[in-house]
Image (cartoon, rainbow, N blue to C red):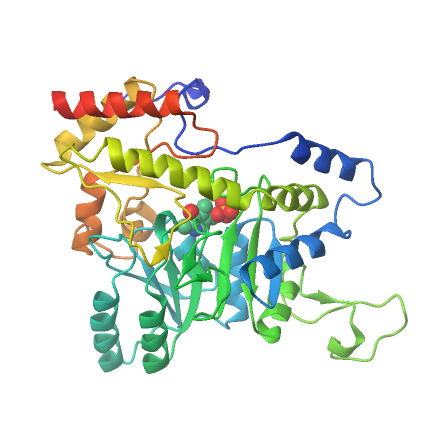
Length: 397
Ligand SMILES: *Cc1c(COP(=O)(O)O)cnc(C)c1O
């Protein structure tokens, strides 16, 4: 395969996802630069409270990425060597890597062929087998792929029956709702993680947050975020030597969010509803104008509110055709993408022994999926270009 020139990532194409930055955002960040605190100031806790109250969780722990949030979440849940973490076969690698960071073993559950989220029936079967083998997971990371909520009630009852903890990787799903409840309320899970990377729903440049209703988990995550150090006397394991004293009571990292990032995140949060609304309008227009094409459109169940982070179509009739359509769209300046290859097919996971074909529905999805551009700054002329290019591609191939 020819290697891409290094500049090609940055040439003008209709991107699949992109931030929307307002003058208010710029002003909010500039104000921090003129203030006393660039980090560890008042805005990070304010951002945590704002997200917590928005999604209805008791605690929010802001960190420098969703990847870090997943890591501290796994640490707080006590994940360690010899434990198993399971996640969906179709997700970003971070949903699985967090298990490896903790020395745990990782395994993958196949997806539902219509929602593309982890399939509860496949999970149930796998749990039955694991129970017989005495190898039940300690943590299940469920992923609300594209912003479409997973069937949390069902997953909760499996968690109760088989005794595992649930972390929701809601990197795609701030603003989504499950049975009228905001994703992030943690009603059916132990911890929910958001990402504020620029392609996600709202951004703080890099950034993430872990939501929970458990004070114990929140404290453990806050500690892991900052070296395992505490300044609270009540938490110290030995008497403090004096008012200057802090103690490291566990092992942590520097996963802190900056004040600049918190300011941007807070400002962006004001537009969350607006962002979700414009994504919904774009999705509605795709639904209408692509309805006649011989492709599978995303499932949009009426009882669930998706944040519509991604709009994934599926084209059948073989890998070759999928590839041709994908390449045609890229050539036409449409920045399509593929979210995602089954995680276990990455070389790192293949080395652990996972084989191609391990999760058949995930493999079928991978042979057919294409993410079309969807983000609040996509204007209707650009969307028309996408629709026309896709129509042409389907016509040719
Ligand atoms: C983006 C993403 C992450 C990682 O988010 P970062 O904030 O970039 O670390 C994790 N899981 C999923 C499903 C994602 O899409």
